[in-house]
Length: 186
Image 1 (tube, rainbow, N blue to C red):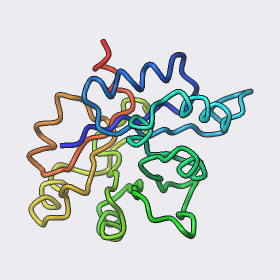
Image 2: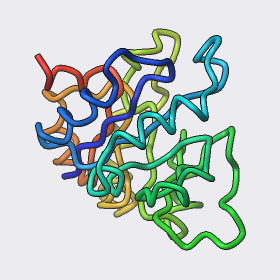
Image 3: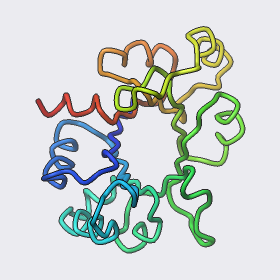
Image 4: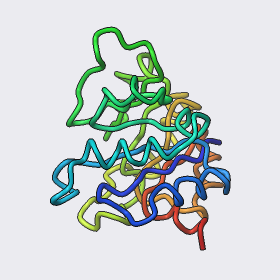
């Protein structure tokens, strides 16, 4: 089962050190997600370039970029993530493809086109208290039995390490965490 970390959308002190520690603790992939509006007074491109320049080639090869697809090419990253801000890949893109989905219908629609999909929120979000899950246990059980949930579907939203056995039993291919992942660093 893949363990995926998603960075907070704001600037974080010692972010390069934190990303390295996450890899050292067994995280497979880091999604570098920084929204322009969440880094006040900073040039987000410069901030992201600073992070990526400090990482090794091997570390960058495990980074999926959100919102700034041009950095994929500049830094030989693992891939690009599609979300509400970036709705399509660059025309010549052939790299690793990931996408955010918020329903099982979206999972069914997009699964064949992507390397993996986030299904979110599977549980009520930890980092966004207003972000409640509308996916019930019965829906997850049915989707698992029907083979809709498989190695290409990553559980996101309210995921903590104690929930991994349950998610494995449903055949999720991995888990992604924003808040809960930092328990690894304690």
